[in-house]
Every structure is written in C-alpha cells, then in structure tokens.
Image (cartoon, rainbow, N blue to C red; front, top):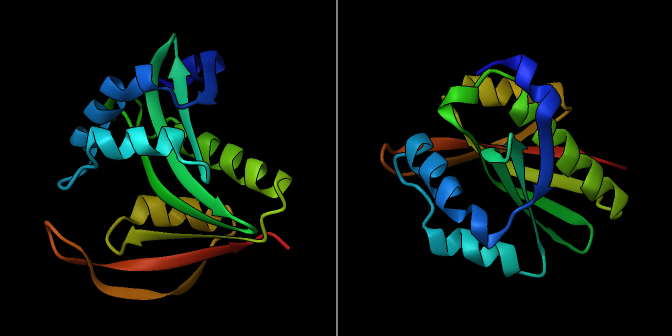
Amino acid sequence: MGRKELTDMVIDVMKVEDLQEIVAIETASFETPWSETLFYNEIFKAISISRVARIHGKVAGYLCANMIIDEGHILNLAIHPDYRGDGIASRLLKHMIDDMRDSNCRSIFLEVRISNENALKMYEKFGFTLLGTRKAYYVSPVEDAVVMVLRLT
C-alpha cells in the first residue's frame, strides 16, 4: 500500500457494517483479540468514541475510546498489517485527541504493552507521559502494561 494512499483516507464513525473488517484486523494484530461483540458494544455505548480509518472504502485501522465526564481512556487501536508504518495510527490518535479536547476532556489515559516500542514512541510524540506500570496486565503472553496520560488542560 503506502503513504500516497493516505490522501484518500477518511476517518469515520465505526459502524456495524465495519465489524467483519475490524475483527480481521484485530485477530491479525493481537494474540488475545477483542470479540465482535465487544466492538459491537462500543458502537452503541453512550460513552464510546470509536472511529475507523477508511482507504478506498476499506477499513485500514480503528481506534476505540471511552469518555466519562472529563476523562478519556483509549481502549484499542490497531492498523491493518498492509498499512502499518504509514501514519494511520497517528492520524486516528490526533483525531481522537481533538474530539476529546472539543468535548472538554481534561486527561486521556491508556495502557500499552511495555514491549510495544513503536506505540510508546507514537504516544510520547503526542505528549503522553508515563504514569506507572501495571504488573502482568496482559496475558498471552503475560506482560506488564505501561500506563500513560495526556493532560489536555
């Protein structure tokens, strides 16, 4: 694929019709993937902000987050293997941060595998800072999570 196609990228609200493509990306990305039901619930949950990145009508990536009052939490972010490294994750994250800021969010939290250096670098680039770690947070394989926060105010 490649960066030249990003000019054709659209960030859109996640829809039920996207679930098959989303679950395929999720399964290709994680050893313990979310189920279709979990994504379905995010589409209809009042506190959810879930977006997809489409290129030529196909889902290239997605981001699920929740916002309660003035606090956001990024729950899940994945990019189709063919599009990794093309900046789609950064575009989705920037869009989400802007949405939350516009909704008077004060802080955004997330957990990420301690070994996921690419994700850690991306989050740091956006101003997320280390808050702490959660021991053995992830399973298959067991691994610590880095807890990060972005203060918007």
